[in-house]
Length: 398
Image 1: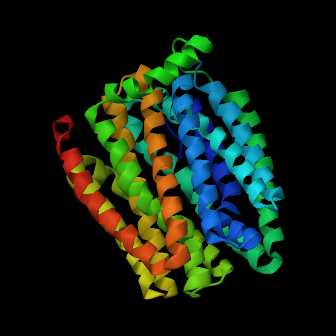
Image 2: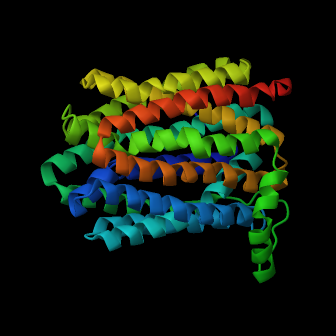
Image 3: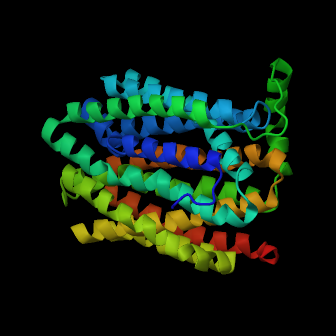
C-alpha cells in the first residue's frame, strides 16, 4: 500500500490532494493561454498571475500565524472551499477585471497551505519525513500533469469554452474535497487558542521577528527560493505553453497536454532516488539537482517534441527531490510551535518568486521569447551554486 504506515491525517490530506490536483490539471496549466485567448495580451496574462501571487504573500503570512493559533484543520477546510470558488470564477471570466477577481479569490485561499504542511509534519515521525514529503509532492503534481492532455483536447476542439468546462470541473471537485477534509481530519495542534484584534496586530508586528527567529538554513532557503530559483521556474513554466505552441509552433495544445501527461510518469522515478539523495551530503545532492534542472529551459531551444518532453521530465524529477530535501531540513531544525510560520515563509518564497517571475516573464515573452528561456537557465545555474553553499553549512546535521 502506498500510504502504509502513515497516520489518518496524512492519508486524508494526500488522497484529497490527489483529487484536487487531478481536477485542477485539466485547465489550469493553460491559464496563460486562456487569459491570452480572452484578452489578447501575454503581459496581462503575466500581470494576473503576478497579482494572484502578491495576494498570496499576505494570505500565507496570515495563514502561518493562524495555523499556530487556531489550529491546522479550520484553515485547511475553509481555504480549500475558497480555492474551489476561485476556479468557478475563472470559468466565468470574460474580461480582465473578472480574471483579477478570480486571482484575488485564489490568492486569499492559499492561506491554508502552511497549515497543510504543518499538519503533515505534526502527523509524521521524523524518520518518515523524507518519505512523506516526497510522496506529498508526487500526489500534488502527478495527477496535475496527467490531466492536461484532456485540457489540450478541450482547447483544440472546443476553444475557450473547453477550458471553461475544465475550470468548472475543478471548482466543484474542490468544494467536495473541502467537505471531506472537514469530516475526516483531526486537529493536531496541542493547544488551540482563540484569535482577536490584539493577536492580529501582534501578527503584523511580529512578521519580521518571526523571520529572524527562524534557523539560518530556513532563512537562507526562503531568500534563495524567492529571488533566484522560483523566479526562474515560474517564468519558464508559466509561459512554456505559449512558447511551445504559439511562438515555436512545435506542438498543438493537445500535444503539449500529452507531453505534460507523459512527463508526469517521471515523478515516480523520484521515489527510487529518495534514499540515495537522503543519504548523500545535502550540499552535493541539492546543488547537483538544481544544476540538472537548469537543463530544462535550454532543451526548448532545440524546438523538437522529444526535447520538450525531456525538459518537463527533468523539471519534474529534480523538483520533487529538491522539495523533499528542503522540507525535511526545515522540519529538522524547526520547533513544532514555529512550524506553521516556518512553512508560511517557505510557501511565501514561492509566491515572491512567482510575482517577480510572472512580471518579468510576461514582459520578456512580449518582446523576445528566447530571452525568457536564457534568463531562466542563468538563474538556475546561479541557484545551484548558492544552494550548494547554503547546505554546506548544515552538513553536521547529517
